[in-house]
Image 1 (cartoon, rainbow, N blue to C red):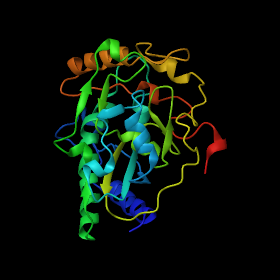
Image 2 (spheres, one colour):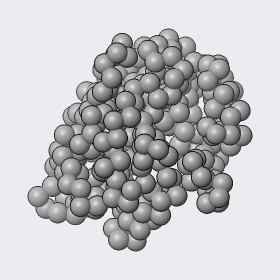
Image 3 (spheres, one colour):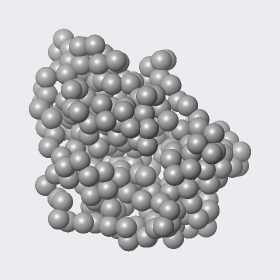
Length: 281
Protein backbone atom coordinates (compact mmCIF):
# COMPACT_ATOMS: atom_id res chain seq x y z
CA UNK A 1 0.00 0.00 0.00
CA UNK A 2 1.24 3.52 -0.83
CA UNK A 3 -0.03 6.88 0.42
CA UNK A 4 -2.10 7.58 -2.70
CA UNK A 5 -3.88 4.23 -2.41
CA UNK A 6 -4.43 4.71 1.31
CA UNK A 7 -5.85 8.21 0.82
CA UNK A 8 -8.26 6.99 -1.85
CA UNK A 9 -9.41 4.02 0.24
CA UNK A 10 -9.80 6.20 3.32
CA UNK A 11 -11.79 8.85 1.44
CA UNK A 12 -14.26 6.26 0.16
CA UNK A 13 -14.75 4.93 3.65
CA UNK A 14 -15.22 8.29 5.37
CA UNK A 15 -17.64 9.68 2.79
CA UNK A 16 -19.79 6.54 2.88
CA UNK A 17 -19.61 5.73 6.59
CA UNK A 18 -22.84 6.13 8.60
CA UNK A 19 -20.62 7.01 11.56
CA UNK A 20 -19.53 10.20 9.79
CA UNK A 21 -22.84 11.89 10.56
CA UNK A 22 -24.63 13.36 13.54
CA UNK A 23 -26.75 10.58 15.02
CA UNK A 24 -30.32 10.88 16.30
CA UNK A 25 -29.50 9.35 19.68
CA UNK A 26 -27.06 12.12 20.59
CA UNK A 27 -27.97 15.09 18.38
CA UNK A 28 -28.47 18.35 20.26
CA UNK A 29 -31.22 19.31 17.78
CA UNK A 30 -33.41 17.13 15.63
CA UNK A 31 -32.79 19.29 12.54
CA UNK A 32 -29.07 18.48 12.44
CA UNK A 33 -29.44 14.69 12.46
CA UNK A 34 -27.62 13.24 9.46
CA UNK A 35 -25.26 16.21 9.03
CA UNK A 36 -21.91 14.88 7.73
CA UNK A 37 -19.02 15.81 10.00
CA UNK A 38 -16.02 15.39 7.70
CA UNK A 39 -15.08 15.67 4.04
CA UNK A 40 -12.56 13.32 2.41
CA UNK A 41 -9.32 13.18 4.43
CA UNK A 42 -5.88 13.99 3.07
CA UNK A 43 -2.84 11.91 3.99
CA UNK A 44 0.85 12.64 4.38
CA UNK A 45 3.84 10.57 5.43
CA UNK A 46 7.07 11.26 7.31
CA UNK A 47 10.10 9.06 7.74
CA UNK A 48 10.63 7.86 11.31
CA UNK A 49 14.20 9.15 11.19
CA UNK A 50 13.32 12.61 9.86
CA UNK A 51 15.58 15.04 11.80
CA UNK A 52 12.61 17.33 12.45
CA UNK A 53 11.37 14.89 15.10
CA UNK A 54 14.64 15.23 17.02
CA UNK A 55 14.34 19.02 16.76
CA UNK A 56 10.79 18.93 18.15
CA UNK A 57 12.12 17.00 21.13
CA UNK A 58 15.27 19.08 21.60
CA UNK A 59 13.74 22.57 21.55
CA UNK A 60 11.67 23.54 24.57
CA UNK A 61 9.99 26.34 22.61
CA UNK A 62 8.46 23.64 20.41
CA UNK A 63 7.63 20.72 22.72
CA UNK A 64 10.86 19.63 24.37
CA UNK A 65 11.70 16.52 26.34
CA UNK A 66 8.07 15.54 26.85
CA UNK A 67 7.86 14.57 23.17
CA UNK A 68 8.64 10.94 22.37
CA UNK A 69 10.30 10.03 19.07
CA UNK A 70 8.59 7.59 16.69
CA UNK A 71 10.94 4.74 17.62
CA UNK A 72 10.16 5.32 21.30
CA UNK A 73 6.58 4.35 20.51
CA UNK A 74 7.36 1.59 18.02
CA UNK A 75 11.00 0.37 17.93
CA UNK A 76 10.58 -0.94 14.37
CA UNK A 77 9.07 2.35 13.13
CA UNK A 78 9.84 3.36 9.56
CA UNK A 79 6.97 5.69 8.65
CA UNK A 80 4.45 7.98 10.29
CA UNK A 81 1.13 8.38 8.52
CA UNK A 82 -0.57 11.70 9.24
CA UNK A 83 -4.24 12.18 8.38
CA UNK A 84 -6.18 15.45 8.23
CA UNK A 85 -9.95 15.16 8.46
CA UNK A 86 -11.44 18.45 7.17
CA UNK A 87 -14.82 19.43 8.54
CA UNK A 88 -17.70 19.39 6.08
CA UNK A 89 -19.15 22.57 4.64
CA UNK A 90 -22.25 22.19 6.81
CA UNK A 91 -20.14 21.91 9.96
CA UNK A 92 -18.01 24.91 9.06
CA UNK A 93 -20.85 27.19 8.03
CA UNK A 94 -22.77 26.37 11.19
CA UNK A 95 -19.97 28.02 13.17
CA UNK A 96 -19.63 31.18 11.06
CA UNK A 97 -21.74 33.18 13.50
CA UNK A 98 -19.40 35.12 15.78
CA UNK A 99 -21.55 35.57 18.86
CA UNK A 100 -18.87 33.84 20.89
CA UNK A 101 -20.57 30.48 21.26
CA UNK A 102 -19.86 27.32 19.25
CA UNK A 103 -22.66 25.90 17.12
CA UNK A 104 -24.32 22.62 18.11
CA UNK A 105 -22.84 21.01 15.00
CA UNK A 106 -19.36 22.17 15.96
CA UNK A 107 -19.72 20.79 19.48
CA UNK A 108 -20.57 17.41 17.96
CA UNK A 109 -17.61 17.63 15.60
CA UNK A 110 -15.28 18.37 18.48
CA UNK A 111 -16.40 15.41 20.60
CA UNK A 112 -18.27 12.75 18.60
CA UNK A 113 -16.27 13.73 15.52
CA UNK A 114 -13.05 13.00 17.35
CA UNK A 115 -14.43 9.63 18.42
CA UNK A 116 -15.11 8.87 14.76
CA UNK A 117 -11.52 9.84 13.90
CA UNK A 118 -10.15 7.49 16.55
CA UNK A 119 -12.29 4.65 15.20
CA UNK A 120 -11.18 5.42 11.63
CA UNK A 121 -7.52 5.50 12.65
CA UNK A 122 -8.08 2.08 14.19
CA UNK A 123 -9.51 0.90 10.87
CA UNK A 124 -6.42 2.11 9.00
CA UNK A 125 -4.33 0.32 11.59
CA UNK A 126 -6.23 -2.91 10.85
CA UNK A 127 -5.59 -2.49 7.12
CA UNK A 128 -1.85 -2.23 7.77
CA UNK A 129 -1.82 -5.15 10.18
CA UNK A 130 -3.70 -7.28 7.66
CA UNK A 131 -0.72 -6.74 5.36
CA UNK A 132 1.64 -7.92 8.10
CA UNK A 133 2.91 -4.59 9.38
CA UNK A 134 3.31 -3.41 12.96
CA UNK A 135 1.55 -0.24 14.09
CA UNK A 136 1.04 2.15 16.98
CA UNK A 137 -1.42 5.01 17.45
CA UNK A 138 0.21 7.26 20.10
CA UNK A 139 -2.97 9.28 20.76
CA UNK A 140 -4.72 6.10 21.88
CA UNK A 141 -1.87 4.65 23.92
CA UNK A 142 -2.24 4.56 27.75
CA UNK A 143 1.33 5.85 28.01
CA UNK A 144 0.44 9.14 26.28
CA UNK A 145 1.49 12.02 28.55
CA UNK A 146 -0.26 15.39 28.58
CA UNK A 147 1.38 17.95 30.85
CA UNK A 148 -0.21 21.26 31.85
CA UNK A 149 2.23 24.10 32.27
CA UNK A 150 1.86 26.65 35.03
CA UNK A 151 0.60 30.05 33.77
CA UNK A 152 4.02 31.67 34.15
CA UNK A 153 5.60 28.84 32.13
CA UNK A 154 3.03 29.13 29.37
CA UNK A 155 3.68 32.73 28.34
CA UNK A 156 3.97 32.61 24.56
CA UNK A 157 3.72 28.82 24.63
CA UNK A 158 0.86 26.28 24.71
CA UNK A 159 -0.75 25.54 28.08
CA UNK A 160 -0.32 21.85 27.39
CA UNK A 161 2.57 19.80 26.08
CA UNK A 162 2.23 16.17 25.08
CA UNK A 163 4.42 13.19 24.35
CA UNK A 164 2.89 13.24 20.85
CA UNK A 165 1.65 16.19 18.79
CA UNK A 166 -0.66 15.59 15.84
CA UNK A 167 -0.02 19.03 14.33
CA UNK A 168 3.77 18.84 14.59
CA UNK A 169 3.66 15.38 13.04
CA UNK A 170 1.44 16.69 10.22
CA UNK A 171 3.90 19.54 9.62
CA UNK A 172 6.75 17.02 9.41
CA UNK A 173 4.67 14.86 7.06
CA UNK A 174 4.22 17.69 4.55
CA UNK A 175 0.54 18.40 5.22
CA UNK A 176 0.85 22.07 6.14
CA UNK A 177 2.27 24.83 8.31
CA UNK A 178 1.15 26.69 11.39
CA UNK A 179 -0.88 29.87 11.44
CA UNK A 180 -1.22 32.71 13.92
CA UNK A 181 -3.90 30.76 15.82
CA UNK A 182 -1.54 27.74 16.15
CA UNK A 183 -3.75 25.62 13.91
CA UNK A 184 -2.16 23.90 10.91
CA UNK A 185 -3.02 25.28 7.47
CA UNK A 186 -3.26 22.44 4.94
CA UNK A 187 -4.04 22.54 1.23
CA UNK A 188 -7.72 22.07 2.17
CA UNK A 189 -7.56 24.62 4.97
CA UNK A 190 -7.25 24.46 8.74
CA UNK A 191 -10.84 23.66 9.82
CA UNK A 192 -10.50 20.03 10.78
CA UNK A 193 -8.76 17.53 13.03
CA UNK A 194 -5.76 15.21 12.80
CA UNK A 195 -4.88 11.60 13.45
CA UNK A 196 -1.65 9.65 12.99
CA UNK A 197 -0.31 6.12 12.92
CA UNK A 198 3.27 4.95 13.39
CA UNK A 199 4.14 1.85 11.38
CA UNK A 200 7.04 -0.21 10.09
CA UNK A 201 5.50 -0.02 6.62
CA UNK A 202 8.19 1.37 4.26
CA UNK A 203 6.43 4.38 2.71
CA UNK A 204 7.77 7.24 0.61
CA UNK A 205 7.83 10.45 2.69
CA UNK A 206 5.62 13.28 1.45
CA UNK A 207 7.63 16.27 0.18
CA UNK A 208 7.45 19.48 2.23
CA UNK A 209 6.95 22.28 -0.32
CA UNK A 210 7.48 24.77 2.51
CA UNK A 211 10.82 23.35 3.61
CA UNK A 212 11.27 23.64 7.38
CA UNK A 213 9.48 27.00 7.71
CA UNK A 214 6.73 26.40 10.30
CA UNK A 215 4.72 29.50 9.27
CA UNK A 216 5.17 29.51 5.49
CA UNK A 217 1.47 29.40 4.67
CA UNK A 218 0.36 32.09 7.14
CA UNK A 219 0.11 35.56 5.59
CA UNK A 220 -0.47 37.24 9.00
CA UNK A 221 -3.55 38.91 7.58
CA UNK A 222 -5.05 39.16 11.06
CA UNK A 223 -8.47 37.81 10.09
CA UNK A 224 -8.41 35.18 12.85
CA UNK A 225 -7.74 37.86 15.50
CA UNK A 226 -11.13 39.41 14.75
CA UNK A 227 -12.90 36.08 15.11
CA UNK A 228 -11.69 35.21 18.62
CA UNK A 229 -14.44 35.82 21.19
CA UNK A 230 -11.95 36.52 23.99
CA UNK A 231 -9.24 38.45 22.08
CA UNK A 232 -6.67 35.70 22.61
CA UNK A 233 -5.02 36.41 19.22
CA UNK A 234 -3.01 39.41 18.10
CA UNK A 235 -0.50 40.22 15.39
CA UNK A 236 1.82 41.68 18.01
CA UNK A 237 1.88 38.75 20.44
CA UNK A 238 0.47 35.79 18.53
CA UNK A 239 -1.71 33.44 20.56
CA UNK A 240 -2.39 33.94 24.26
CA UNK A 241 -2.75 30.28 25.17
CA UNK A 242 -3.76 31.03 28.75
CA UNK A 243 -6.73 33.20 27.74
CA UNK A 244 -7.82 30.65 25.12
CA UNK A 245 -7.58 27.81 27.64
CA UNK A 246 -9.64 29.68 30.26
CA UNK A 247 -12.38 30.25 27.69
CA UNK A 248 -12.34 26.60 26.63
CA UNK A 249 -12.72 25.59 30.28
CA UNK A 250 -15.76 27.85 30.49
CA UNK A 251 -17.33 26.10 27.50
CA UNK A 252 -16.80 22.76 29.26
CA UNK A 253 -19.05 24.01 32.05
CA UNK A 254 -21.58 25.63 29.77
CA UNK A 255 -21.92 22.81 27.22
CA UNK A 256 -21.04 19.78 29.37
CA UNK A 257 -20.28 17.03 28.37
CA UNK A 258 -19.14 18.84 25.20
CA UNK A 259 -16.93 21.88 24.69
CA UNK A 260 -15.23 23.83 21.93
CA UNK A 261 -14.97 27.10 20.04
CA UNK A 262 -13.32 26.96 16.61
CA UNK A 263 -14.24 30.54 15.68
CA UNK A 264 -10.70 31.38 14.51
CA UNK A 265 -10.94 28.57 11.94
CA UNK A 266 -13.90 30.10 10.13
CA UNK A 267 -14.52 33.06 7.83
CA UNK A 268 -10.78 33.43 7.38
CA UNK A 269 -8.71 33.11 4.15
CA UNK A 270 -7.19 29.82 5.34
CA UNK A 271 -10.48 28.13 6.28
CA UNK A 272 -10.51 25.90 3.19
CA UNK A 273 -7.12 26.37 1.54
CA UNK A 274 -3.70 28.00 1.50
CA UNK A 275 -3.97 31.79 1.24
CA UNK A 276 -0.43 32.18 -0.09
CA UNK A 277 -0.48 30.37 -3.45
CA UNK A 278 3.29 30.59 -3.88
CA UNK A 279 3.73 27.46 -1.83
CA UNK A 280 1.18 25.18 -3.47
CA UNK A 281 2.97 22.04 -4.66
